[in-house]
Image (cartoon, rainbow over all chains, first blue to last red):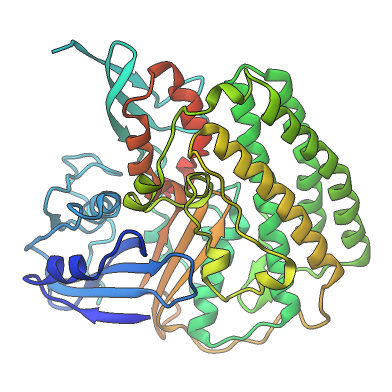
Length: 115
Length: 361
């Protein structure tokens, strides 16, 4: 897979510059626990109709920062953004809790740091 | 401004197959906005896969995500782990795996068509399609030993070989099924109440399909040429005659046609698999523990299924991420509902073929 490292300041601009809705397919947003109370996020894309390795934009940041959303130009990303908020207890711009868990739940099933 | 009425549908409702709750905001009969609640059967499978089970067991755990496409789930996970273990499987294993996935597609599409018929008021046709679907269920039972939870795929291969008798049963049952699918095709393309009245209902345009990253039969019915069988080289689909099937219109009628044509194509592909099944081992030796990250995509009956697996040379994986077709299709579903009549909502929903068990995992 093609990995591209981004940071909090340029993640939205970088993905927006790359993403062409008629050519690229947004697979999902993945999250992983990282050392030092951080979280690693991966925005994964493939291309329609061709055999190709996925392109992955990776961002590592502290767990308590507000992560920008890509839903302004990828509306379908709302599902995986909400899932990430529920499962990892992070905050993503405009993504409310309550997809799987109760909105006021204090649980974050995948958010425990195991590293 | 017209008065807006909120009408709930679900989580338990006669027209719903699985628990999902919609809140339709309607002006008279027209749906203006929709809220969807999909988390009723969340079971924490991803958490269990990365904490309670060793990587060799996880393939059997993820098969429980969905009873309908259990083989596709275990195959997606297994392929990802095989990539991390650098396992190259024989052509016979690839063919047997393709065989089971195509059988999954046939009976899953038939289930959807049965429910489409039921939603249109054709109870007897529903029963007939479900009865004919048994021909495929019998084949899967003969091949895997189980009727629903197949547990056929294992890391490095498959758990059962295809005997000559089982191969003959596959061909016999498919030859019985094919004329029944032709008959269904005739009904779905000629009967007003069953299908023709759904032309233009629940339509998704090609532009919307791109915008909402739509997948599977939903996308192909809108003319979007996307199919993971075309976009990955994990399996030799070209050798068994795979060609992408698309329709125009993006409505319920077009989705029915895509599924019917895909059943016909899967039957043809299964025949090619049986006739051209290569000799070879059904289980490759594997060693070591997964290290690194792998992403695998499989064309499940409802669309693209993705497994992301990350390991750190330990028996317990660091992450197992499952992205299911219905999960990513929900924003498109909501968009399709907007502007539709509330009375059409159950039929539109059935045409999505949603799987909440996969979605909530």
